[in-house]
Image 1 (cartoon, rainbow, N blue to C red):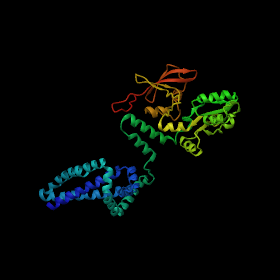
Image 2: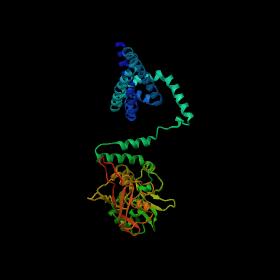
Image 3: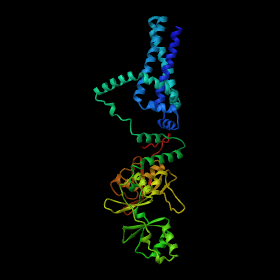
Image 4: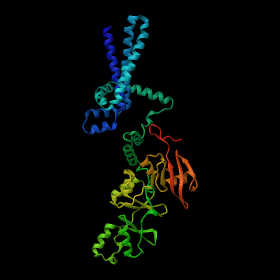
Length: 426
């Protein structure tokens, strides 16, 4: 009896080992293990090797766990039957169920969930050995399982574990901490992932807001305008703003002024301007960022499919998509978003939905439009009048101001948040 009791305890311990190992290895952070392996951690490398074939890992651990659980139950039943007779089976089932659930399942798995990385390192050598020994049996089991699933039309060889990009987005959404700090971090990380999905026309400075100079004007007037301008690069055109002939940099102008001893009449602005760089409006931010790096330029003109000038995009615009607005001492920066004491927001119509999502963490779609005004036009299928109110995507919109056919100011009321801080659309 004593021998059987000792063996049962050992077997329960082994069951706990297999259960905890399975949880630790499935919950372990692959990113941290990969980083640790690069730093020379041999056990982390072994964990990564085990995770390289999860199907075989799960098969080996489940096989070992079931063997020890069945063995423990059989020993307990045999011991208690010898003491209580046939009723010992009932006692054995009750006792083993309690012991296995508490000490072989809940306890080790709970510990493993909270110490997944460390436990995975500790158990990896033994688990690797078990998987190696059980490999022939698990291979046969895997074939039987696949064949059985194939009968009902399921081919697990075609099942993907899921997009790594989607997994990364999920991890970003799960990132928690001080609300304001975490919101900024989440926004920045999401923006990095979005660079390959956002086109330049969604972040461009529209042509109506671009400061441009007509080369047909007197040179002294143009030089004065350049010196007063808060921007370092200014487009130049002739006759029509669609006929862009170059970009003048204030640094080049200062150098030229020095060369001609301040005699403005001797300056040829078109000669010292750089060639304009035109890009299609379908270019995505990631590609444009790489193009800026390769060309060593910070400024590009965006044109539509007909070659018409739509606006400009700069390196700063793309960087701001990642880190948020960048202001310097020369910027006349207006966010266009003014929070009100009653919890509403007065938002300019040309504020982009992406800015609202990034800065305020609002869940608003932007697939079919890029600005707040665009959202209202798309959803209402009309040009709303001042004072009209709408409710879309859980948000209340009120057109506060409209100039001709342009919505210039909107009052937005975000959905109320529940006690957990999550938006609660009515």
